[in-house]
Image 1 (cartoon, helix red, strand yellow):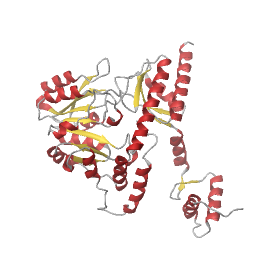
Image 2: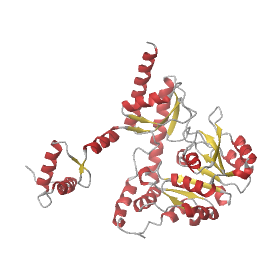
Image 3: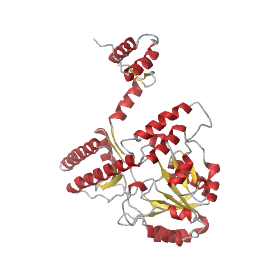
Image 4: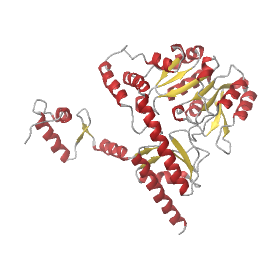
Length: 403
């Protein structure tokens, strides 16, 4: 019998052996003891610590799910990003570590000076920082509903008011009405919020509409434009809003590495805004972006072929899944993102639970569109599992309705 032990098995044997109190024995013996422990139902975390059965059950359940609920990149960070993050582990014990000059790299990639950027632990922190900067109990945020709700929940949490407009019949944001509401409440508006493309609908605001908004509200009112999904957009009428920042307009753009770059768990995003706005925001920023995220972000920006592969995959599976659903008679909202909404013509909540029972996680409720289900684009296998579950659920519910 061969005595060869792979590097992976060697490391696995040694780390697990530490938990078993067998450091110092050969890797083969340590590995054998780990296998015997596994036979008794004991498993080990990567560092070698035994995994509690409750945690083990949760991990197994999570790993088995088809993750179609949070608009993630199902492939995770690119190989180059993983290599960079692995390298950055060497700084894990340090403060003031080299951060790969991530802010300068972000600024260069977007053709703005470095003082136009601010890092956050995901774009979610940027949205919170904007709220802390320009909202108070006597201020209002103007936006639409449904949209990404973090801004509105944060406003409510600090006793600010939300002025939320409904979407139009075609699911677009009514920019003319947004201008009207902003102007009628101009003295009390802290900022205007646009998610573009909008989450959860995947529908864009056009370049002309953005221009109309900025040209027709008081120039001192900040406009927060959430561009978390801008990489996915192919609509020729869409335009990124960077030019308004370069012009010195009161515009904050929020972006993230969570979506196209697959770094959701690493928590890194950024704001691009004129330097005076960045300075207003800075006191509310925590500076909590870790070394791995900083190094991974730079490598992600430099690995555009990986991003392009993700875009091709996303578009193909999105169009295929929408086509499959439409062939079954269900209307889908045309999307410019890595998710879409399908009109189920009934309350989504029990259907979402039925998906979960079949090992598929889908989107939460988005009031008032409680009959629409948001579906993220996953791997080919995950989308196949979604369609199988969808047909089974709808068939079961139709049969039940006929009883």
